Image (tube, rainbow, N blue to C red; front, side, top):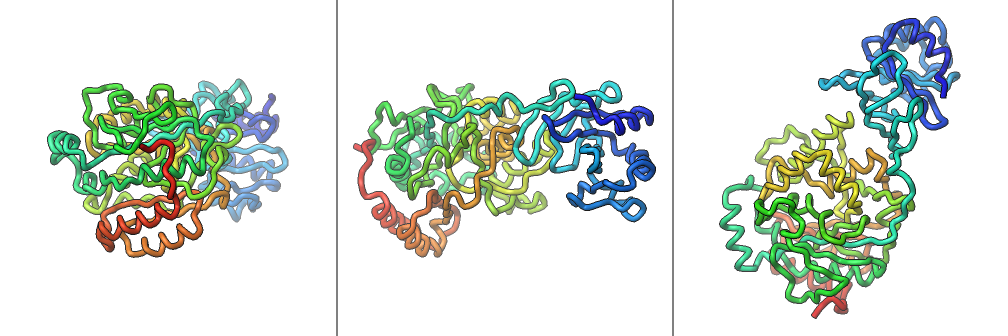
Length: 461
């Protein structure tokens, strides 16, 4: 497709180094270095005093002379009458040009070899979660966006029996003193039979699930009846380097889940304290094109300036993820994900492990939670899938969700509400809070489970 002749002639005559491409049959985008912005401003004053819009305020007309500062410092300018946009790029330390415009089809590119070159070797993304690849003078949807409806979906759990004497000895030998203070508390490994009732919720409300995998460290729940439908997978079966075992770090284990033998391309990762409260469908996890639904939380990642002694391991994993996205995509994710099941694709997990091979390997080698960890299913995967077109925001209000801390006094009220009107998903998380003692927490959990899931599943002895 030919470019816009008017803008092409100006850029070429000014000897401005630029690259450009047309998004499918939509707008023409031109990228230049911010150091050339004054020449663009002068051109606009001479040739286009009208029909210009600020990208900083979408649809806001620019009054040249009055809005020169906004023009110069903004992310770019749109020529409304020409259907074209010029984006002003900052130059990163690695030489890539990076745009600030949130609706740009690209995040960062290598500079063109000659003026007028097409986009190449860039990170292509938009807010609409469409990922592009450059094909000559056009940006086309990446092949990964081709519709592929999920036909088989598996469920994956991670589980540990912290009361197992053999496990306790291993943990004492291999992890003593190796975790920062907030990363290795006993409550992290506490089992209160949540897995049993979570599986009951799967059988009751998601009977379409193909297989259920329970990932453990040489353990198996006493009540579980292993079958062709429910399978126990040992850490040795999924860790590529078995010399790092045993591992007590959930981030390390989660970095290997996609390696489960026989796992479906589409799978949903459940923590054992996450439950279904009413019927759900595959469309609550993946859209019709096979994109993972992203469950954004209202909660934000904490500020990196918070003193280290007040940080918890998930905070640090969030910082690590944000640093990678700032480097590779030019933006910093700020919102956490809900404590819901995590819809994942095996191929995207594999891609993440290849793209960030060093960081993933370091995470896998950390026996207990560490300051170098990545939390892949719950932090890195959703944003990476979103940025590359394999993830999409769930429709607000399409499912109901509740989260509660079993150690807080509000847990009593939550149990009453949950048993009367169960949401689609809820998480009964145990943390360091002790407003309710463990005996009271267990009593409330037992009451809730008996009300919601009174019948044994066919996977119990």
